[in-house]
Structure formats: structure tokens, C-alpha cells
Length: 321
Image (cartoon, rainbow, N blue to C red; front, side, top):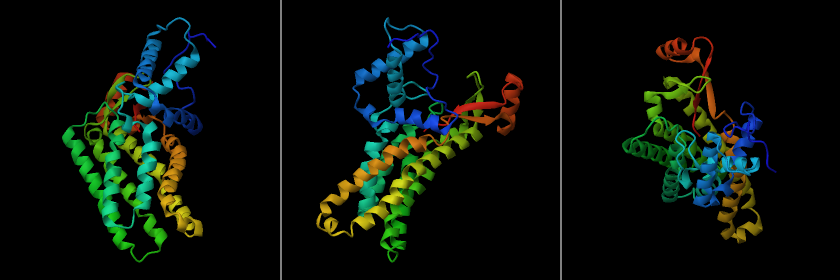
């Protein structure tokens, strides 16, 4: 049905982003794995529709439903800061199909050191998503990216191998939890390292009218901390509960005879967990964070008060995903 587009603002979220439920609905939409199957021309059409809507120049007969669908595709495939198309592997909508395969294999091949090293390396290579979903206002050099990648990979492998050796005499279930410990440790290193420029130079903060008022290291630290928590929460249910499930299933006579089903079953179950947890984890914190001016660095706080006075008690910034 064609609607009145005169007061339509395509950048206004469909759901209240101040509430967890509103954010959950938003991320259920943009992390929809089906969006990665859309052809390039469909994504380019979505970007053109969004840009035309922002300029107030829409083709005759444009429907509200078309604009909402275009915005869904745009949010799933284009970076919110730069408007550039993100690589497919780095999109949050690829987290379910990509993550389910890697996580499933990590949870299955946890017994031997070579397998642990290989799958932790694969997982950290997949962590390109951390760079893709950074706050793009802070550029990252190739050297910094390489150093972050090597540091996170080393941390993950060292944690996994070390805990594997440490838990050799532990119950089998404890050994199955080693991959999660390695992933959590690597996230605590990979994300801050990949986004270190934001911690060094500060992240762009804006007033309530979206005017940039400066760069804050404290805002960067807050945003990165929230992203680390979200990423660990995203992986936790599947990597903690699935080993419990598989430990019991593998004791059944049917599963003992059908060992070939163990890997595809774990991959499928990982997909079920991630299908739910990706949007839930992304929704834990608002995409656009607010920070009281009183919590900013002293110089920036004085600058903000000089520019906007007491009319804007908060500054706002994109924390990334």
C-alpha cells in the first residue's frame, strides 16, 4: 500500500532503540542471514533508495514497505559511518552461517593440539568482522591490523593449548569448554587491539543535533568494552550448553554407531543458538551510546560546554558492533 511519504524519515528507527526489545527487533531485521543472499544489484538499489529518501526525491509510486525493505538491506550491508558496502564475511548477517561452521568444528575437534591450533586460527581469521564493524571515523593501518590479528591468534591458541594440557585429567565436559575460554580470551584482546586507534586518538562524539564536538578516549573505552561483552555473550550459550548436550547424546547407542553425524549435528545446533544469540547480543547495548558530558576528559568537557553550554548534558557516539 502506498503511504504518505511527506513526513517519512528513513533514518528514524522503526523500533524504540532505548529499550532492549526495540533493539532486539531492529537487530533481528538487519542480522537476518537471508540478506547475504541478495545480489549486488539489489543492495545497490537499496542504497539508492535510502539516499533518495534522505534527499526527499522519491520515484512516483514508491511505497513505505519498499523503503523499509531497502533500509533493512542497507543496514545489513553498508557501514553506518562511511556508507561503504561491507565485505560479506564481515557483515553481522554472516555471523550465523559463518559462525555456526567454525564454532561447530571448534567444539568437535578439541582433543588434539594441531586441531585446536588450526581452528583457533580459523576463528581469529573470521574475526575480520571486528574490523569491518568498527567505528570507521578512526582509521586503522595495515600494520596495526596485522599486529592485532597476530596478538589475538596467539592469545587464543596459547589459552586453548594451555588449558587443554591443564585439563587432561579433568572430566571430559570440562575439556569441551576449553574452546569457549579461548574464544573469550581472544575477544578481550582482538577487539581492543583491532580498534586501538580509537583508544589512542579517541572516538568521534556528537551533540544531540549530530554536530561533532570532539574525540573522546573514554567514550572509545566504553564502546569497546560493551562490544567485547556482547561478543562473549553471543558465543556463550552455544559454547557452554552445546558441550553438555553433546556429552549426553554421544553416550546413546544410536550416536555411538553414527559418529559421522556428530559434526553436522553440532554445526546445526550452533546455528540454532547463533540465530537467536546474534541479535540478542547486539541488542544488549544501544548502537548509539550516550555519555554524560561530566564523564568526558577535562579538556573535551570544557570544549563541549563552550560550544553547546548546558543545553546538551550528553554526547553521543557509534560504539560499533
